[in-house]
Length: 446
Image 1 (cartoon, helix red, strand yellow):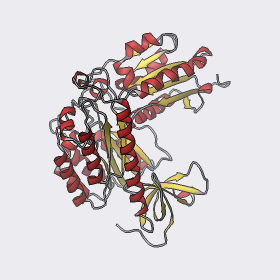
Image 2: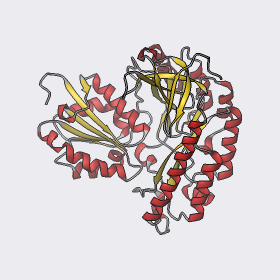
Image 3: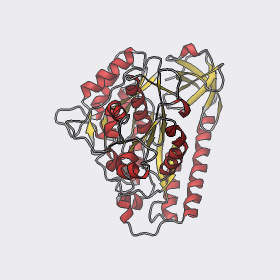
């Protein structure tokens, strides 16, 4: 335990960007009660693991993590489980880890984490009920001093019923945050020095559609772009079905809107897309891609891919491989299908895809994806690109790093005082996951 009076919190995060964002909010909220973040669980008074339920692997990681934290709880630290797994399996976790865990709470209760932690000092606490719309409170960013970029929540939950996905069961139905509060938070962040905002939600394209008189997503983009001093806007995640012409038009109109879009496709097979209940087909997806590239030439596209969905044949997988070639994705998150409790896919009668075949397909996809990424990055050599400097490299104090509008990471020699500025960088080398460059004397092109 720490020898002084300062309280410390250690948070381990498994899962998606939403979980990373929730962990940051938890740290900020607990900071109001004097908790300082620590990277050493041995120094922590409070240990939290923020969990994912989309795939099986995070559940395996949770079991291992709780075992590793057992000695720290025995010395007096409080241990809690948060996140999606805590939402859908809260009571089971509460019983399974009755000797190891003091607190279990779902995503809806992140805003109440201070009260829950205080309650857990005297009794074990389980809180995984969904809050109704009137009682749910979006947590705004409390401080971003010294940060170049920040996330801003615009909605929570999801109304889609993709057969492979457990998110509706863990994060509830879709709820949009009032646009006035979103713009107010962006203004406050920019005033603190933030230059890049990422709007986040489970399906941002459907923002505001359930609220009479509210802005839709395209209108929100235009409104946020009006904030003085904001240089870049990103957003995640989009559903191809809901990518409308108004959002595509924004890529023509808004220079602040970055030239990168993560557009999850999941499969290149129309047959599997129907079984997944994605409500678009391959042709529709490719049409959206063509419209985006017409509106913003050079836009970088990344995606999600599921390999081995129930009933996937060799032909289905070849359709996914051909889609990879047709679009030329510059990155992807690709995973083997993992059956999740309570998802409709469990009711499909197909025999599961052989694990060895599934692994073979995944490796083939990932290998080709890496080849495409490397080729795309090598084509950029000698080009000059605007880069928003994020700060010093973790590995070399003489090197700073930043991202292009297309979300490519570039490392180059420079001073950390450039953080927050957009500088012109000439690309000198292309690697699979990053670029190397040098400050350019000539200005970058558009």
